[in-house]
Image (tube, rainbow, N blue to C red):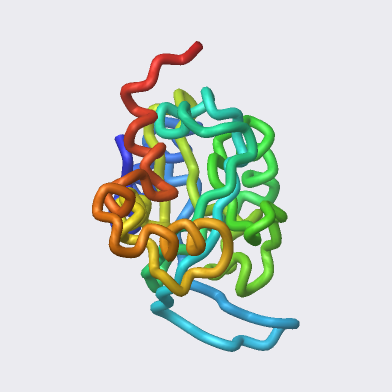
Length: 193
């Protein structure tokens, strides 16, 4: 099961993710908190392209099996309440150690940073995607469905994926090729080696 954006909120509010204690709501998706040096610079709805680093082993989650360890992908996000939080201090550290924090916000080089704008939501431990214990349910705030084809990538996006998109201009076959998030959906049917 994959819940994206509002779907991620449903999975969290149902207690399916992280799913440590059946029937319990262990995390929440709170309003975005965008601050620089303690000063709030923006509130509520935010839309941008961001980078995510695969924080778990690829085989840990059925939605990441086709990625290389530590893979970095560019994705759009668009939401007002996407900040993964918990009242259980230390929970996110335990989730990271257990491989349940699947995706973390990072810069283009893969360096995770909880500060805005690298983590555009203010999420604990820069969490962008969180799976259940079994690895078959993923709550993800950025939108992989909006980056599955190369044609969905903005031409002015900086970095390698933006350069690849610009190079494909006018080439229909290339534009219909895999975008940075295609692997999320293709991983579901992938066999674990």
